[in-house]
Length: 501
Image (cartoon, rainbow, N blue to C red; front, top):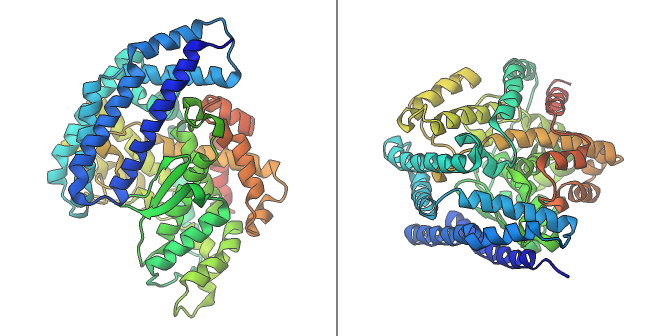
C-alpha cells in the first residue's frame, strides 16, 4: 500500500526538476555561448521559467499534498521521509515570496548581470549603480517577505536559501575567530615568504595549451566527460545538472595558474554533482546539501589537494610538458617551486584570485557589507566608499576609484544572491575538516596523490558526502563524514601547517 499523496509529490517534483534542468542549461549558454543580442529575450524566457517553477512549488495543492503525506499512516522509507522534508522546505521557501517579485527580480538580475560584463571592464560605476540599486531593492523586499513567513531575520531568511539551518549569529562567532587570528597570521606568513626564493615561469602561455592542461587534469582526478564539459565565461562557474555538468573558466596568456586553479576548483563542484545519488536526482533529496558543503568540495579539490605538494609532484611534469616554452630554467617547473608559487600569500584586490590565507578576509568584507545593505543601514550609492574602507582595514589596500577591482568585481550581487558569500569560507573550513578525516581513513593518501591515484579518495568523498545528497542536515552530514560538527580548529591548524611549517 502506497502513500498516494507522496507519490503525487514525486511526480510533481520530477516535473520541476526537468524545468530546472532546462533553465540551468539556458543560464550556462547565456554566460558562455549566447550572442549579446539574445540577452533580453533569454532573460525574459528564464524569468518565465522561474515563475512557472515557483508557482508549481507554491501552489496550494502542493501544500495540501505535503500535509496529507505527512499525516498519512503509511510509512515511508528513510530516503522518502528525508525527501518529503526537503519538499516541505522548498514549499515554505516558495510560498514566502510572491510570483510577481520572483519575475521582477529575475528580469532585473538578468539586465544587471548582462550590463555588468561590459560596465565592469569599463570601470563604469555610474551606469552600473542604478541597475544594482534596482536588484538590491527587490532583494530587500524578498528578504522581508521571507522573514515575515519564517520568523527569521531578513538576512537569515536569505542565508537559509543557500545554507539551510544556518544563522548569522553563528557565522558572526566563527568569523570573529578568523578576524582575531588572520591579520597577524597573514603578516607572519608574508614576512616568512619574503626570504623564500621562487622562480616565476614566463609566458606567454597559449590558451589552447592551457585548455589542454585543464582537460588533462580534470580527467586524471575523475571528472566524467560523458556527463560534462569545459567552456569559457566572464566569471568561472559550475552549472548544468548532475547528468550534464557545465563548468567554465577564463584564461590569461600571462598567468596559467589562474585558469588552472579555476578549472580544478570548478571540477570539485562538478565531481560533487556527478556523484549525487543516482536514484534521487530528480527529487529534492537528491540535490547538494547547501552551498557551504558545495564550496567545501571545490575547495577540497583546489586548496586541500591541488595546491598541495603531493599533487604538484604528480602534476608538475604534465604542466611542464604542455606549457614550457623557451624558459631555460628547469627549476621553475619543479614541484617545490610550483608549490611555493601556488601558495604565495599577498593581499590583493580580487577575491577569485586571492590566496588561501587572505581569501576569508574578502568573504568577511562582503558578508558585513551585504548585511548592512539588507538591513537598510547602507545605500548602494555608498558601496564604493565602505568597500574601500574595509579593504584598507582588512588587507591594507585602497580601491578608491577602482570599481572594477572593488565593489564591481563579483557577479553574485548582480542577480541578488545576497547570503551566498559566507558559504565560501564555511566551505573552506568544512574542506579542511573533511581532508583531515580522509587522511585518517585512507592509508598512504599523500603517496596516492603524488602518484596521481585518486580512486580511493573519490570513493571516500562519494560515500561520505556526494551520495548523501540532502539526506542529512549540514551538521549531520559533517558528523557522518568526520565524526563532529564544523570546528574551526581544523582550518586554522591546516593554515599553520601549510604556511608556517
